[in-house]
Image 1 (spheres, each protein chain N blue to C red):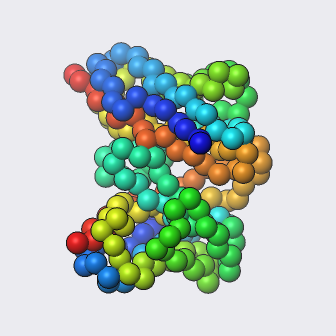
Image 2 (image 1 turned 60 degrees about the vertical axis):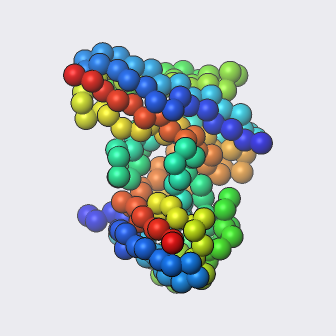
Image 3 (image 1 turned 30 degrees about the horizontal axis):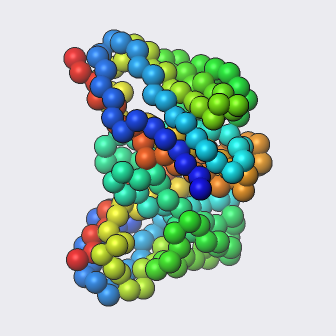
Length: 109
Length: 116
């Protein structure tokens, strides 16, 4: 079967750095996505990785290792508005998106 | 730009009742999707469409039907609602898909459905 694993919940302090991990086992790989979802709202796109390495976009960075089936989302200079769920999704060999259950990030002052 | 609009936002049904969720997008996207989101689970694809007049089954299509008569609209129907269909439903759209491309989805705000 296909599987995406993420921690259920994480807590971090405002101004700090947090790393949210995602491991996957899918039939094929055609890219990995990170989406942010605030409570009661729609998911919004954060990042896309298809090659190994780090993609940086402002305070957010996403890393991919295809050989390890592993990605992480790094959030720097945390702000209260970063409190949200972070969804990892992998596009498999059929170009279908397989979604993780999401990581709820709680930011404390 | 409205983006992706879903109606209704909330609905309570009794078992056996039928209803239709409407999704409208104004971005001229070819692809449209219906997902459901349940606690502790990832988004699961119900049905999707790769263009006007086309529909295809996703991961969890049973109990649902869809239609895409116009490019901008994608309807999700429940013919006989069951408590297992209590969920939050998200519509999404995208320009299209290439095998190695970033097919970024734009989601609607969600429709919360409760079936008693």
